[in-house]
Image 1 (cartoon, helix red, strand yellow):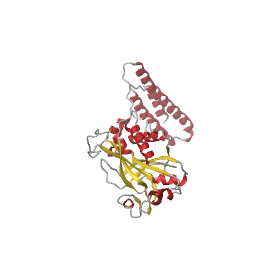
Image 2: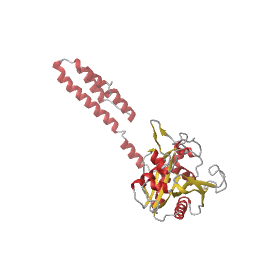
Image 3: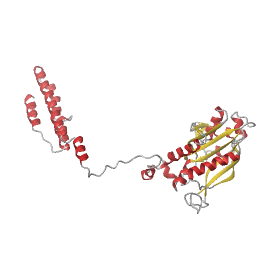
Length: 340
């Protein structure tokens, strides 16, 4: 054992390496679990008791010597030396560091929040898993309304009263139940509907809904608010139009279209070749919805609106296929690295 140790000591003294890789190979050869030094430590148990102290000290010295030698060899090729020589060469091209980017839906969501914040709207949030009362009943949905069918809504199998929310209107109900007017809030969030996935629809999407409740709120207030939003989001030349519609929780109700930014009004698959794109539904809050939340409908009125973030993002960035938002294709996402 002592002879073997002495031979390795002499051998280690003569070690040389021409590169960092060669120095690493020497470390593996001598100091890895199956290296020469480690094998000697494994054989130490067979050393006679009267020699263990002497041999043990020699083994420790050998191990320390091997580490020291390998470290010396590596120091000649360390990253600091390489970096130093590189930094002195001013003709070398800069290292291309790729930067991350925000998701386009997050960018637009933040822009929407900022636009409404300028006119006094605050933000509220609520659960994605809802009960029937907050998602349907309190919003004036009748018991036989199609939205309650499994073909339109994802219900939790263990409890038919629990479901994935189909709109963020449920947060409006929770807000009206706990907050006294005046109320001026928006409710961004993810919603779920049992729909076929296509270039224009998905089973998961994002909404921002708004609610304004106070004394003497009128449809004119709603129209001016939405006109302000459209011009701030899409540009001063954006045109809007309001069409009569129906929603259980607003009366009167309407849908708002904006002039299509993708085709300039000529017609494309996004605007269904009409030149207009519907971006939100709106209306005056139905008195029944107010009363369901304990708000006196004789004293207070209000308006509500809801828009899809995907649809607005498609218009703003001229994206023709909604599915791109969910495929995590870096070629698509990296286009937004310069956005805020």
